[in-house]
Each structure stands twice: as structure tokens, then as C-alpha cells.
Image (tube, rainbow, N blue to C red; front, side):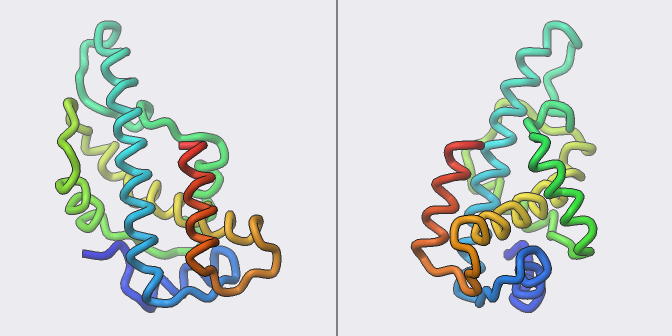
Amino acid sequence: MELFGVARFERFFRAAAGLDIDKDDLRRFDDFVNDKIYDLLLRGQANAKANAKANGRDVIEPQDLPITKGLQESIHAFKAIDEEVSLDAILEQLTRRPPLDATYSDEAEAKLPLVAGGLGVALARTFAILDEGLKNPQTRHWDRAIRIFDLLL
């Protein structure tokens, strides 16, 4: 199951950063977003466990997710684009990962589509920063952008 359909995916990247993306990039995008969401949930799990003694809970809450100022701004930009990401697709992808030791709350789960959209906006804008004037990212652009995110998230 995909986060976006092909037409919505193409429209999203045009709105986010003026890029022309094709259906072949959809798998790369889904893999990127799902990898980063899982990474954020792993850190959220660690934060929830660290705070478990103080607050008596072992559930990942939205405040446990390490959302940076930049990612929060990208989430706001995603909201302005007015597209939707499939929560079902995110949850399906997460079931293919090693299970977390902690569960996530309904509130944290509900935030995942916005986080996915924010990651998408940040990725699209990263392409534009890496190669000013870029219109159609190629494999080398995807690889460079993802390496940058791997350093940051």
C-alpha cells in the first residue's frame, strides 16, 4: 500500500518544491518516509522509556517523538499544501519492521500522517537545496538527500 497515489504524489512534489517526480520515484519516497518514521518511533520509544519512571507510562506519546523545529515547520507547510497521507499505509509498513517494545498512543498514531507529510516536504526542499534549479531528481539526488537525512534523523 502506498502513502500517495501516483497523481497525488506528483502533485505533492510540484507544490512542495516545484519538482517533477514520476511514478518510479514513488517506491523510493515510500521507503524513505517509512524508514524515517520508524527511526522517529525508535527515538520516541527511548524517550518514553526514559520518562517511564517519572510519569508511570510505557506508551509513546506525541511529545516523545523527536520533532525538530525544521520538521515542525515542514509539517505546517504540508498542512498548507492540503494533501493527505494514508495512515493505513504507514501502519502497514510499520508491521513489516521489528516490533517496538512500547506501543504508541492514539494521539501519536494520529500524528504520523502529518509527520510523513512533513518529511516529504523536507525531502522535496532538500532536492532544491542540493541542486538549485533541479526539476526532476535522479537516483544520485535521492541518494544524496537520503544520506543527509540519515545524518540528521
